[in-house]
Image 1: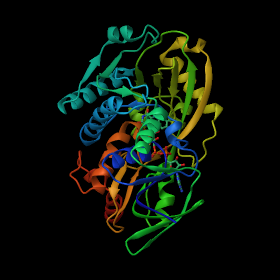
Image 2: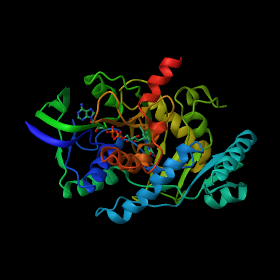
Image 3: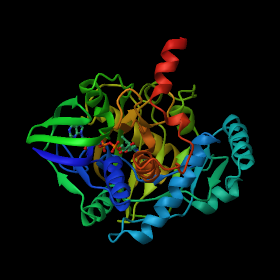
Image 4: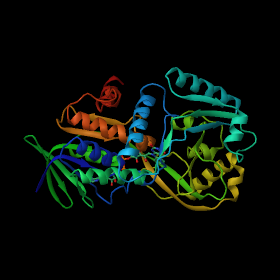
Length: 390
Ligand SMILES: Cc1cc2nc3c(=O)[nH]c(=O)nc-3n(C[C@H](O)[C@H](O)[C@H](O)COP(=O)(O)OP(=O)(O)OC[C@H]3O[C@@H](n4cnc5c(N)ncnc54)[C@H](O)[C@@H]3O)c2cc1C
């Protein structure tokens, strides 16, 4: 039996970030992962650190704090993780979207964020490969991008140097609490711990069940195409405005398949000279099999915005599961009824963006320090309160 001060369950980007910040604060950390490290959602995603798609207010302020922390990490961590901060843009294909975009920019500017509208000429300058009929769009100047896999490993390597113990192929099967200690049974033996952090992404509800907690997170599947860059199509992240509508569940004017699979263009040029092109949004359980129909739908959507992409080569495709919550905010929280048990999961399509701030907040909670952002909106209890008032 091994004893640890802090046991983190889940070796995705969230668990790795927690291990980094908590070990940096001088605590004894152990992180356990049921498969290989970073083999879950954090290796089946894009790497955007975005404020452009966040609701103005708490959501975007939290993203800005995380953007600043990632910028710091780019100087602090030994291994680089393909960090760039060129900003990002949303493009509009109708007058209706342009009007909605103007309102979005006004709200963001009022909240102090560096947003601006783009007209047809700006869009042309951004890329000569855009479809001729695009009307304009908007820009957020602070948005950045990373290789999520490298960022997670970079955080983990640094945590290891600070003494973090790591166990892979170690699946948590059962958790009990005896006196003030957690007894964690795994596929490779028993751990005891003073504090446990559930950072198991879409599997966090299963860990929750082991301590009689109902954690309302569901897998929301997304597909990505990796294409080879044969032409300089663009050098920063581009999304269609419809992505926002798709994300927040609004009604779009698109063909039935695009609507059915929640497909909206997300285009990300990577440092390795490829493009990541997405994406879809579906609730289809834990199935990560790639669907050709969804891939075709994403490809068609891409060609609608970049007709020239029809000539480019596809290298591969993959699908991942976003850990979805109904209010699109993660749970980064203590659990009042189980002292020293924490949840850091449910980041949906923002877990790369919010990994740094999540790791920092969990460190602050464990060390009983003032948190760098308000944590009220991220409380686990918020769902219980909603159930009672319904
Ligand atoms: C298509 C797509 C595109 C995306 N693009 C972006 C983007 O551009 N920007 C962004 O910010 N976010 C993006 N996301 C979201 C982001 O990928 C996730 O929010 C993030 O990866 C979640 O990280 P995590 O550590 O919580 O989960 P995971 O990476 O899934 O890690 C959880 C880990 O817990 C382990 N685990 C589970 N159960 C157990 C157990 N019983 N015992 C031990 N270990 C266990 C799992 O094996 C897994 O490795 C995207 C997601 C998808 C699907």
